[in-house]
Image (tube, rainbow, N blue to C red; front, side, top):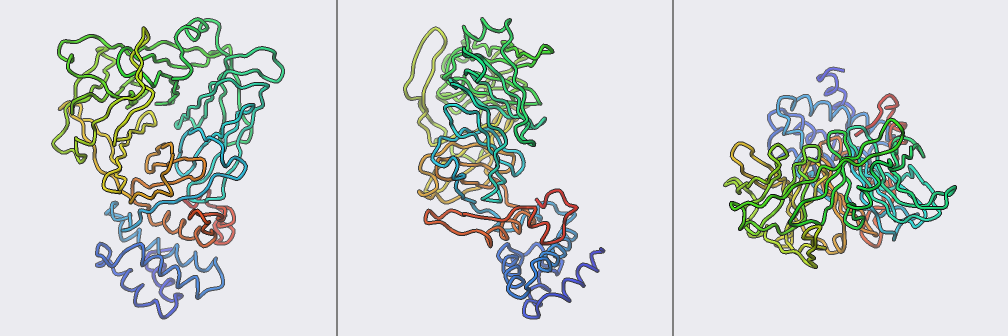
Length: 458
């Protein structure tokens, strides 16, 4: 269908009372003006919803509308993001695991992966971030006893990893196991045990209470996330041809330096790029240290004049500090600035003046400078942010608690995503806790609007 055909069809079919508004929106001269807003799109949708009995007709006309808008804006990509398309989406965990401690695994596109804490199971669930009731169990593995578990997510190959220690149903003693899970299929996984050659390294140097697992460039790594000063234990995890896994020591060396003697690290290490072992350390000054694997040393980066974040908000101090032969550690950090990394992307989060402000951490390698660039901000709401654990995707940050999943876009939703969510709200109810309950599946939506050939609407 051509642009003109879509426009003619849409204008002919819409209710007469909305014709003037549609003409304004469809006018190419008005596209970049204040006349085009998400509210107007929603008003248009509401008018159509009240006028037509057939949801299929409504969506057909709306897709014609979207096609026209995208056609007009094809040379101006930034205009695809409609004003006011930033809003929080809050819904509860599934009733089957509500109240359990939830382990963060990862985000891919609009899919969120979580693991409720179980004493005898490795159990992983996924959910579409724009469909509140779309929780789906993807794996459940029983153990006689489960002693330890940590998760990692390889976005490139779409694989979830679980490193665990436990007693399997057919065994008598605990084993160190790496589970490779396909999140696109139900109960599709492979178990590999720790290679004998890596046994001594694991037993001597891996402190389970402090281990985190991350992925970058399709490779899997684990590291000690509690080290503030000193060498950082760091390993690459590889599956062998013999269906075992090895841990390869790639320790981050902390050399003594006269130039850096006044720069004291003050918080947990932050992974900028796991594959390149590019790790960030904040200091007691406005400078930061970034590890360079080529020279096996830390390099000082100063704050850029183009920084959007007030440097005073970066200040922090460690709590519950401990010193020993295996490094200087902290159990917690007191700071207004919260840092979240997925192994290749870093976002800073600051609560200031009753608003959460989100910043992307950027590095200028030539100038040896860093900056925080503002992404978005939201008004603080005590109901949503009582106790949470954050995780990030490319365009969203998610706050996870035992009672709510709070999704905050870091960039405005595109028109299709905004319309998709608005339609979801028609099938949701607001609970007493002020969260969305319910929703409609993508398959049902595609059947309603006759888009069976499309794999995903968003």
